[in-house]
Image 1: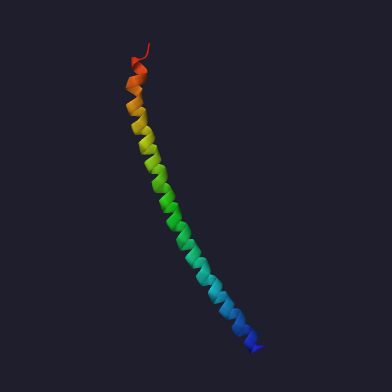
Image 2: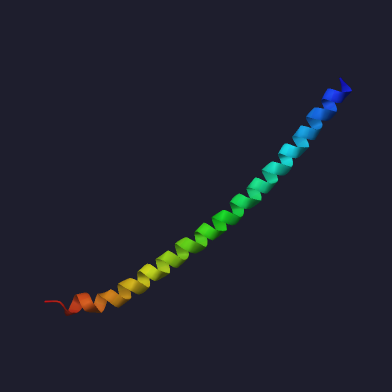
Length: 59
């Protein structure tokens, strides 16, 4: 019985560690996604600013 409890505690510790690592990876990926979205918005605004004068010149 004690062996089974030790085995379960070991598995639980491993799963908790894996969950912490996955959470850290998810937080890192979310930060990267936020940065990409911010850069896309910046580039879209830059492109709109570049194209706006051309659109205004059209009859």
